[in-house]
Length: 187
Ligand SMILES: CC(C)(COP(=O)(O)OP(=O)(O)OC[C@H]1O[C@@H](n2cnc3c(N)ncnc32)[C@H](O)[C@@H]1OP(=O)(O)O)[C@@H](O)C(=O)NCCC(=O)NCCS
Image (cartoon, rainbow, N blue to C red):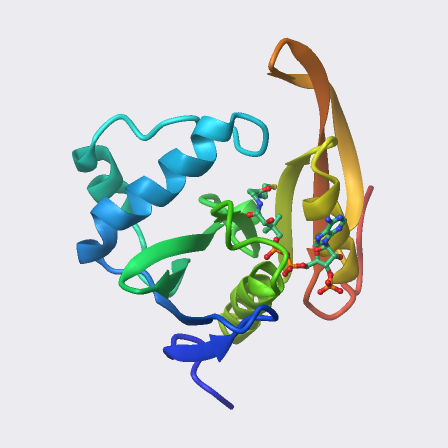
């Protein structure tokens, strides 16, 4: 089985090459630029701006590759996309990993999002997570399609949970079961 923490170069549909690898502390300035560029668009992410480099470094220092992971896509030395997963913090939800992904404008719709999501899910399976979860704004059809195509199903809707440029928008909660069917499941 390949190491899910490997570095791997691959070619996007448009012919450009990116390197996919785990994030590092010395990526901080670049991951912050990536997050801020996407955050400033205001339509895809809850976060709109990382307040400062120290905060980004604090966030980066939380990834240990075992319970939490960050993968970055790098082109010409600059991070152009990031995907992370955080394990549930409690005994009751430690089998669940929450995923976030953000790819810069100019690097979208060329196959990168799918590759990054597949790598996060590969890592989750290797670390024996039983469930992946994420939240997506209902207006983000591109992201919804990607998640559905990977097998995620809608688990809930937080009605009018976010306000995007003055408009109230639903937040959709999605999940993907990765483990064996539980012998018993209570509802
Ligand atoms: C959402 C996002 C991760 C998708 O990644 P991407 O690199 O743009 O998408 P890909 O080229 O890998 O396409 C993956 C799938 O997305 C869907 N998709 C892509 N472009 C689409 C479009 N214009 N309309 C609808 N669905 C689309 C398709 O299902 C596609 O499947 P395919 O592999 O069969 O083509 C990326 O666009 C992104 O980060 N956007 C900004 C931030 C964001 O929305 N983050 C997610 C918050 S929940």
